[in-house]
Length: 297
Image 1 (spheres, rainbow, N blue to C red):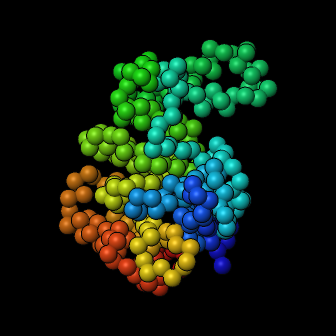
Image 2: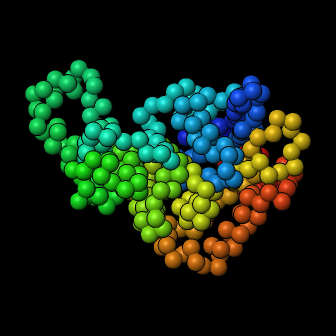
């Protein structure tokens, strides 16, 4: 029996169901069981519409499962809180704030208590200076130093997404949830950001759950790859997606981007694509590849 402290995130027998426009219920997630240890970099891939973002919302706490449980640090997840940072597929920035002001926003939001308000009133310039210095560091890390005083409408889509990443990372949450964060970036910038996120993970050892449609990206980044898919012999009348593959990526970090071109990398990609992402390859539940040491059978 696992102890509470062994796993930071525990999803047990989670189902998520919605209703369509006609009021008919349909299942998106079907009996999801997932244990994640602190400090893991877990990537999740799967066909479009399989529920990857839904799983992330359950862990964030912006949705509750229709059945089953989600626990963080042994406590049930009921709502979002500062221990879980989020970068969505669609960035959300304040149009009337500069890049620096957007990145600082979360730090300023944390100042809303009486003691901190009094401190800010007595030493306003020093507190603001500290926030600005922190923001400058993260803006530089995402390659936007020359744009710190610009507004979102003056930036490209990819640049805005980098601001959103800096905005989430500056708060140093225990769990960083990332939903297709690099989808708007060109190939070169995307690789730069992949390396950047890995560098930050090496420094902070945050637990990262990273959703992507890009299998190459998932393997390159993760210490563990989860495949969520509807492509299996489904005897369950409710349907929905299950975890069909849960495997460790044992290659050490940091990984140079050239590693993507190696034979071992391409062979692993082909295997995962066939087992979890090929709609013509159906398999029985007992044949799912749950080889990771923490996979729940």
